[in-house]
Length: 157
Image (cartoon, rainbow, N blue to C red; front, top):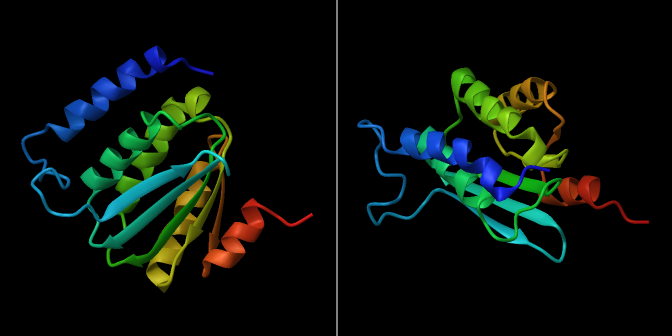
C-alpha cells in the first residue's frame, strides 16, 4: 500500500487541477456541494451521493477529499448513489476519473463499487465507467436501488 506521503504527487496534480483558471469553485463559494461523501469506518464503507448538476471539478474534489480522509483505507468498498443526479459525466471525464484511480491503484486497492442510478442515461454512463474501470483492480456493478447495491457489497450469510 502507498503511504500517505506517496499520494503527494497525486494531491499536487489534483490541487493544480482545482486551481485552474476555469475552475468554478466546487462549492468553495458557499453553495452546497452536489457531490458529497462519508466514510463508515465500522462497516468499512464509503458512501457517495450526487444530487443535482455535478461538475467534473466537484467529482475530483470529492475524490481528493475522501482519499485524504483519516478513515480512508485501501480496499474500501463504496456505494455511489447517483439517483438524484441531474447530470452525467462525459466519456472524457469518465476516462479522467479512471486514470486518476489507476495511477493510485496501490493506494486505492481493489474495492467493489456499487453505483445506484435512477435514469437510463446515468445507467449507461455508469456501465461505461464499469467497463473502463476493468483496466484497474476495481469491481463495479450498477443497480437501480440501494438495497440491491448493499446486498451485493454485504451479502447476508
